[in-house]
Amino acid sequence: MDFLLELVDQYGYIAMFLFSWIVFLGLPVPNEIAAAFAGYLTEWRHFDPYTSFLFMYSGLLSYGIFGYFAGDRFGTRLMIRKFKNGKMQILMEKGENWIERYGSFAISISYFIPGVRLVMPYIAGTAKGITLIKFIIYAAPSAFVWALVYFQIGRYFPKSFRRIVEEVSLKAGIVAGVLVSCILIYFLLKLLKRKYPSFLRKRIRYRK
Image 1 (cartoon, helix red, strand yellow):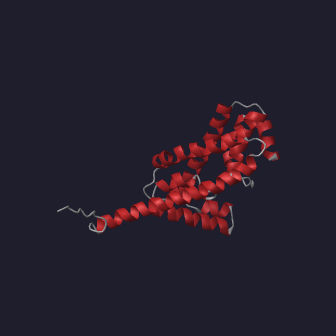
Image 2 (image 1 turned 135 degrees about the vertical axis):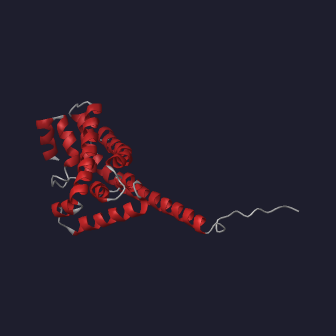
C-alpha cells in the first residue's frame, strides 16, 4: 500500500490509471484492493471522485485491450512466461473452458471472478470469432460495474475497505458461479427441447 501512495504522490490521477496494471507489473496487490484504494484516496487525499474513477476505469479497459492484442499476437504464452506458476496454468485452462462453453458472455462474467479477470483478455484474443469490438462490448459494461462497486467501497468505508473487499470478492465469486450454473441449465434445457421436442412439451388436459 505504501508503494501505491508513492505512485499517487508522484503522478496524481495518472497513478489511478496505473492501478489496473499493478498485477501485470509484478506487484502482489489484488485488483480489488487497488480499485478500492482509488476510492479511498478521494476521501483522504481529496481527489475528485469523478476524475479518479474515470482514470481508474480507463486503466481497467486499457489493460483489457492490451491483453486482447497480446493474446491475438502471442497467444497465452506471454502470461505464462510472466507468471511462471501452476496457478496461472489453471486459470488459463479455466478461462479457455469458459470461452468454449459460454462464448463472449464469459468475458462479462470473468470480471467478477478473481484471477480469471486477469487472464480472460488474453484468452479472448486467441479465440476465434471474438473481435476487438465484440470484446469491448462484453467487457466495458461489466468492467464499469466491477470498478464502481470497489471504488465506492473505498470511498464509503475508508478504514475497513480491505476486509470488506475480501468479503465482497468471495460473495461475487459465489454469485457468478450460481449465474454460470443457471445459464448452463438454461442452454441444456434449450438443447433438449430442440433435440427432443416432446421432452419439455406441455400436456394440455381437457375437462370432460
